[in-house]
Length: 156
Image (tube, rainbow, N blue to C red; front, side):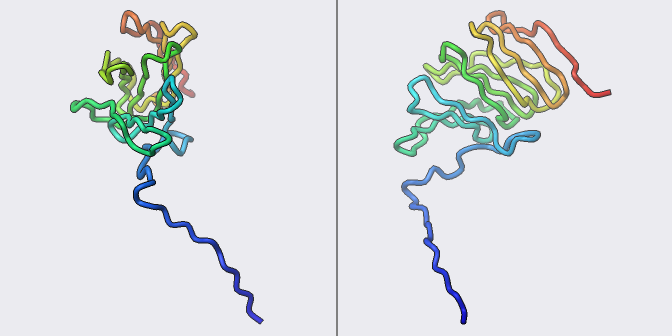
């Protein structure tokens, strides 16, 4: 006798599908990080050279953080403690700070030679720490828009 098992099939509806939601991650991570806005209604997701802003309930893209001059893909995101800014790390080693109230780039920080793999703000939002595939950790002064310290954690 032959056993036949039927399976439920799922076919996504075109109208209810996000499509490509996020870029691929770097290093050991399969996907780049996703963050939520202060209201919890929007998700910010790396989308190649941009950060796509998705309305979670509606499944629609409602905005985009993007500059024409951007070359690298977004690899990591971090929301500031006051939830007014998002820091985006890129595959070219740059970090851009975006104002969430008007979707404008406030500053581009340059200091890494390869993809930014992690970002974290301190509790006040005045400092940002970035790690990169170049084996450097940089502590950034967000207010002065400059690097304070660089640590080399490379394996020798």
